Length: 125
Image (cartoon, rainbow, N blue to C red; front, side, top):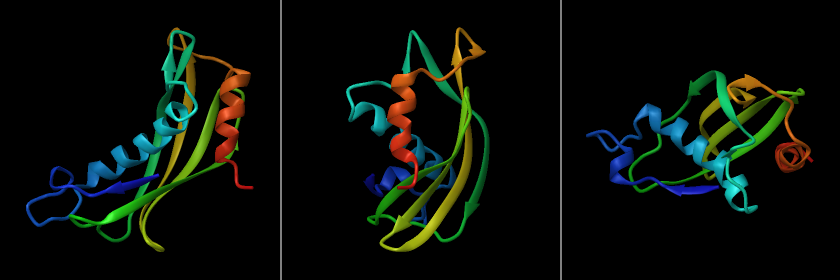
């Protein structure tokens, strides 16, 4: 998913504020659902962040166009692990490893087949 870096994304020096990389990645994950006629949460269940490891490599700047790439590296019955990278052209700017747990009624639950099918698009081909 491509994003343009706007003034609101940056600090006074025009550098993307560190927390906004997490927002870019969240938007990219959500877009998979929206572009397939679903939402990331429903009355049936939703994903929550269990853990994140983030690595800030180079800054994105005001006006840059960045792309977020997502790859699933692990899938269990009630959780997934993704690697998400933010790049400018081919330059890696940010990378994170994120574990998401699937919950229903606030408790871990098996990921439904329809969601499993959708998130399998994140598996490397």
